[in-house]
Length: 186
Image (cartoon, rainbow, N blue to C red):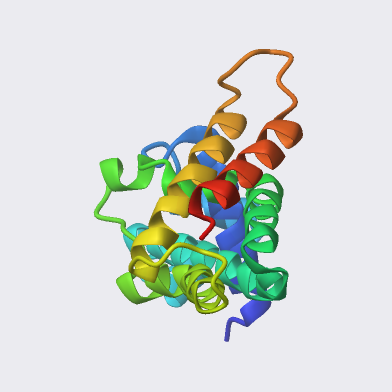
């Protein structure tokens, strides 16, 4: 019998290995060895490589959503800060979730409901700010996606280390959050 602790270890190890070596080079034997378990355990818990990779991405979206739910009381600004914090703390997972490397290698997309759930805290914060008259009236989901795209782009550039070598990404990100707030202000 395999427990949840082993399942979580396998998900974390897989994210790190795939981020480091690429999905084509990582085998289930590599994953099992890194987690100090057997390939039988990996097959028992996940099925095969495609299912394991999907589970990694789904787990990432759940973790991201949980961090956003915890930050939701801080409104849109709090969610923006939490977005960057989560990405910096889960670099490998973030790159796997949004980098497209897995989709290019295997049929591995996040489960649609899991990915959609990750957006709920942002959509709810937008709707709440609109109800309070602080954010322009437009479909809340559209505003949420536009905001997500802006913060996602900056975080992705920071993680890819694309930009001026002396860039203070924290300051850039803070300025961008302020600009987003001004841009959507009612």
